[in-house]
Length: 101
Image 1 (cartoon, rainbow, N blue to C red):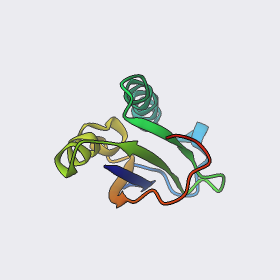
Image 2 (tube, one colour; image 1 turned 180 degrees about the horizontal axis):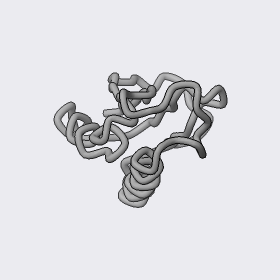
Image 3 (tube, rainbow, N blue to C red; image 1 turned 30 degrees about the vertical axis):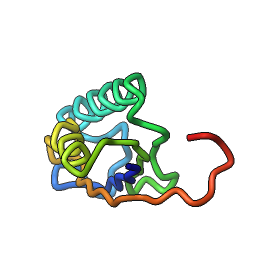
Image 4 (tube, rainbow, N blue to C red; image 1 turned 135 degrees about the vertical axis):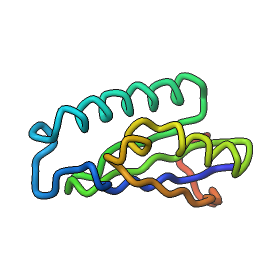
């Protein structure tokens, strides 16, 4: 099953503040978020992901067993758990693809 995770800024994100000027709390959570996503990539769960260029959040495309696994990934993401990001997932049906993901 494929899911998209949409990330948007959460209550611990300082509005109208560039990434590098966020609080230490937010910067630590973001560093942990990147490590968490890298581990998902290494485990074959994360297909692709990254931030939006306008700074409003980001997205990830994952392959998971079921809805429970997607919910667990959201709950364990350090940026979401810390309130820096808000995340939601939606099941995704692959109809078109240039690669074999």
